[in-house]
Length: 308
Image (tube, rainbow, N blue to C red; front, side, top):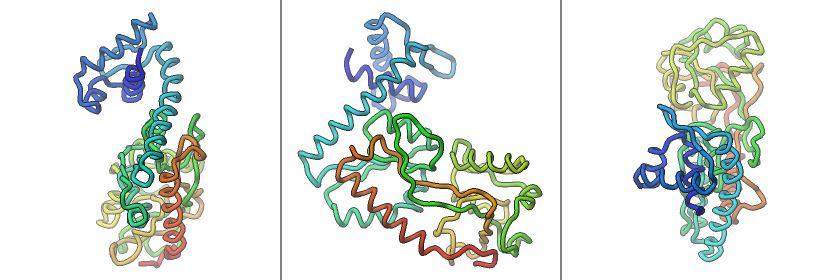
């Protein structure tokens, strides 16, 4: 049994697919299977169940996955810290996050960080949900994840950075654009553009609406917040989204963002395995992002129903 056997096994459990792991590792599916077979041979028990759509861990496999995932992450993190100590300010910072996060929360911070640390490599790995960010962190090899904060996750620390109120995005000629605020009752009468299926923001929003007795109906579902905004500005529906500074101003002349003060705010921020174990470079990048977010979001225009 080797560390590589365990790394492959953890990756297979995370993705549920031998072929996906083979693609990620640039090897054959047979090679991935050999790692699994060696573990099963040495443990004397079946670790994975094969199904038409992939694989899932058996109870024994889940036991090994839980134990190995955290341990391997700690080992890989320590090895990266050692490499950073050797290379000094010429190491790397690895971040996983959603497709549009860098644009809305990190763009200026990336520029500032690169000016300060020109020899440091910033590596971004796209994730489709906060859950996949957590899985990637636990698997090791990553420093930081930018997420929508939600339920507590074992082995992960969550650090709030930006508080986001909810707004209804509509075209400026829509009757709702003239309102100074959107009440919960208003939401019961409209069809919404659905937020990304696996997004924490979607599940939080639907839970809050359900508590108010509203079952949201969606004509369209999108892959990210920016697409929801685009469709709303084109007059193709209404979107409930977190309020972001980049959507205000002349870049969106036909868009109106109307506050929904009855909805609880949404928090976004960092997820890390252990904040006190971050490398100095990763901590510097996280601090730079927080500083720039503080400046950007405090400078955002106040939300009113008549803002253009």
